[in-house]
Length: 428
Image (cartoon, rainbow, N blue to C red; front, side, top):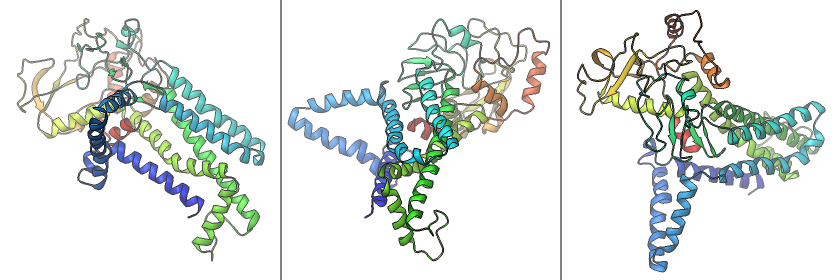
């Protein structure tokens, strides 16, 4: 077996086992060999080891390993962050000596920028404040968004932090703190992705995707030049007419083996680029929807309640008086909630006099019947992410609240959910 095939099989094997370990429990994979392999990794093999250790050491070894595993899986530590940095730096150390002398001045300039930017945005994402809610920052974050009375209701206190939870916030079980506009905890930056660093995280994904794609293309160019020096009729794509696949792959493998550093890193970038672009595309889709990974999963929960006939809504009066003990008197968001969503255990409507809102409760079956008030349209959503603390309205502006709400709500869309949210949350 050639070096190319061995490298490819090794990468595919590692990727497959990683997929099985993280995603084998998904309902869509139930009753499949992947689900059985997942149970073998997480249930059968650990149970066998536990039984053996109980006989040999009375369980002391597995107890210690269990504490270590809990720390690795559920506590904040920089292991994956260090791995990510080493992956970037060692890959560049192996790749650049064989490629750099062949580059033009323009490619050297572009390559230098492409190399530096991921480190810069990685530092800003990892070291920056994701929007940690403290007594000092609490009032500021309370004024960013209004409660939507669907995913986020006023008056909810974090049982761990003891603070009133601002709209769109979530307590991170890994960081042990509440984060404003929490998206997810990312092990690659050893930090939460939230309101304060989401723009840096998006730029980290973009710069990493550009780096891997650019490096893969340059690496293929170098490999093609090496092969063409031996056989001038070789072209990378499409396969030269009249050539067998064996002849084509043998020459390509010789080009990769000419400089193992360049060849292996090129293969790695080509295999990982789709993953990085996919993560970037997913987060751009979330921005388009005006939601986060956390909120997308909450909307999925609401869809389950709707499917069971246990979800109800009714209107909130436009002149509703806010309870200033639980809500901010003013927010920078241009629209206010117009509905309230509740769920019941038995599928019967709540009493008319129960909860906020006016009128009769209406049973809802689809998310399209609900408004996501955090979706202002793609460009405003993008501004909200890339320009922190941007105010969409001002207290002294001449435009009335009704005008602002009407202008925004004309293009409003119902909440959108993605089945990929669970995969992304598990992967990052």
